[in-house]
Amino acid sequence: MLLCENNHEMEADSKFCPSCGTRPAFQTFELEAQTHIDNPQRDVKIVMDLEPVSQSRLSVIFRFFLVLPLLVLIYFVNIAVQMVTIVSWFSALFTKRIPEGIHKFVAGYLNLQANLAAYTFLLTAKWPGFNLALSEKDQVKVLVPQGDLNRAAVFFRIILGLPAILLNGIFAFGSWLMHLIMWISASFTGHTPRGLHQASASIIRLQTRTLAYFLLLTPEQPWTGMFGDRRAEVISEDSSSTPPWEWTLVKSARRWLAVTLVVGIVSYVGYILLIGQVIAAAVNQNTEISAIYVCDDATGSFEVSLGSFTCEDGSHTVKEVVGP
Image 1 (cartoon, rainbow, N blue to C red):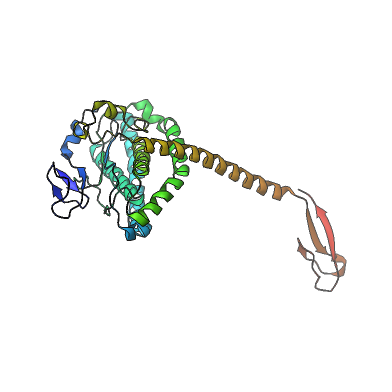
Image 2 (cartoon, one colour):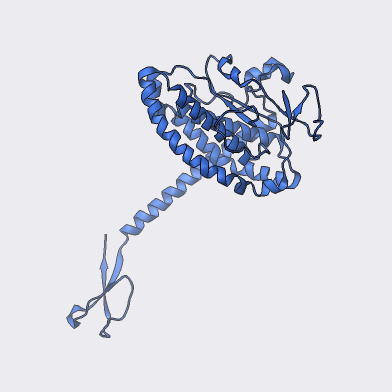
């Protein structure tokens, strides 16, 4: 079933919605099929519209305030997810699987997180709402097949995931320029540039897959398809023959990902150097020689200060130089 930008049902071959006149937005599919996807590697599949959608300029300007209630709610859900992940870790060590109920709950959280991120960074136009159950009307769909896990990989999951954490941090530091341009463009035109839209979507896909890896939903590292899926590029130019979870990125999107990566590395290194300078300055300040002024105790009065002052009895302070 085809849906338009305002989520009205359309015929498969329609170019414009008969209800509101907008263009097609994304294709829905049977959610029950997610457990039967031809996915032997069990990587997390993410379905998202890679074409920029029309945005309300007013909602773009106040986007942060629109997502703020959802950020508060998802904060508390995140606490619950962290707690059940501990149970999942022990379960996977003994049974090589996480409980089905926990898997469904955490997968729903992952889907909600992806929809919230897409709306926050102007990839979708409709307010996502708060729903932990996967729905056909979700603007972003995260498909997480369940299966066995490797016990050793579960035990060393944090160590194995460090490279992914580093890459996510670099993209987080470098994406500010891209998102700033997207926000300015959408504020004036109601659309984001296509290349920036796809680059931002690719970063969200990386973040979602990284989170899925750490939450023990998948045994696969999140690297696949960072610059687009190769299989999607060679299947056919006919989009109908390409599964909606396999992405083909335009060249401008790949360039923006490369630029974001470079900007992120520079920003990340600069941030580390700045933190190092702050720590060094704090240490040096504590080890510098200080001048302490004290009253002459022979007068019967005694006070201490780092600056010169007049004693209570009118006498002058005596300067003492002390070191570390």
